[in-house]
Image (cartoon, rainbow, N blue to C red; front, side, top):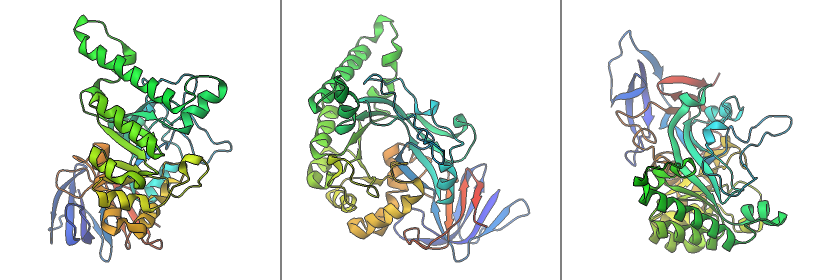
Length: 378
């Protein structure tokens, strides 16, 4: 058992922090209350003058797939030999030995969405994983957690420049529609008894358990993603959503959430020319549920709190910025039953800091995953 005493708790179940203790048993939060009595069975952590948060979450990354800290960056994030690869599973490419996982732990990031890149109109399956472990199977929280689709420049550049399909935005949308139509027909006629591995991967999508995860920067691509999801009655997350501030009301009407970023990156493509930290705040004020992403390694994962801070400064506000990397991120990723807030019964994924995580001088003192101290500042 682990007992965290005397901390200022930002539970994300309420807007205001509380002074309380946290008791952890068997990797779960067992009790949150004042003055929990310590026993000899407990390891005591004194969090006096410290702030205690649920572990931070990056809702879109390629951690462990596009590996960090190698002589030549290892990038296996795209099977760019064919535009439709829904059976690819991110967990088959995530390397837990990637140095970026250490950076994540040292920054209080305990959970990430990880999966394929955006070369293909349909890229494969994301997974929500924890950031501590040596075996990916032991790190999984939810897999599959989403089916990746991509619009805009990346699919066109990957295939169109070589004389293949898609070479246009219409071509990309057509490929996605054709595949989803094929999958819909398959599930409508599944009593035939014939199983198709290339379509079974869509089952949880069409059952409403997981969303399409749409790489979309430009406003028209965002609206195309919404249009297609509505046509097939599917859930959707709008990842990157770079020009979302230009069509905030339309996104709010769709009732789909946005995962905004990477805003701490160069505007190296035409479609990211409107990239700005104000986007998250504009969307939130319009009524959109918002998460912040680094899109690691586009921006390095340890800068997630900094990205949240810059979004707070540009209109998102401090509370909403913290929500965007905790409870709101967990809701968007489909894991809020276990993660994203300090609540009895949830996983004991906790970060202890010596101040406000949105302050650049704040240090993470300790990161806890499943009730185990996995990183501690010397």
